[in-house]
Amino acid sequence: MGVESVSQMPVAEGKSVQQTVELLTRKLEILGAEKQGTFCVDCETYHTAASTLGSQGQAGKLMYVMHNSEYPLSCFALFENGPCLIADTNFDVLMVKLKGFFQSAKASKIETRGTRYQYCDFLVKVGTVTMGPSARGISVEVEYGPCVVASDCWSLLLEFLQSFLGSHTPGAPAVFGNRHDSVYGPADTMVQYMELFNKIRKQQQVPVAGIR
Image 1 (cartoon, rainbow, N blue to C red):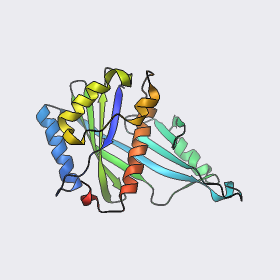
Image 2: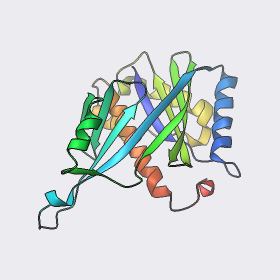
Image 3: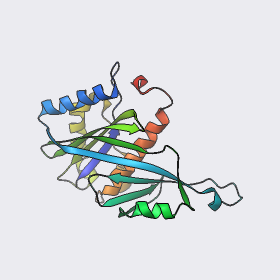
Image 4: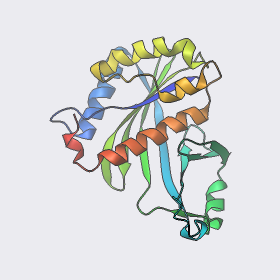
């Protein structure tokens, strides 16, 4: 893998989530990008069980258990502002056995699904973010394959993002600042998706069509 940027694309004014996704994918196809299958990233939230918090009024911790179709044999467990554990898919079974310590939050599952596009050295994934049956937003992931150090290729990634996102081009992901000159890895992508999903959850106090 290379270096990846994950961001949210606002829904176009007067359009639905699906119509905005179609506008984006049409732009990519006009650029010359070719479809390369589909992708899915999902996230389920767990909170510390009340029985483990004691009587001191401690705040419970949240843990996010995530999967990415690019890594079908792996499972990612993340804490906010904390470490990212990469395990095999049996980790889901382990979470059932740990229900005395971590409990699944009700209706917490959120995922993004969509199409992968290849354009020269860039891999682009445009997804529809859903919670239950409802479309909640749009995710855009762009990977620049030949490079593994974010600081060496962000300007190139940014230029490509501007070519089809225009004024909605994101700034550098926060995770880039934490990596400095170290090698970018799958955990860095999952941290970006965790932040994106949490941002979309917080936005859903208003109808998605109202986002501009």
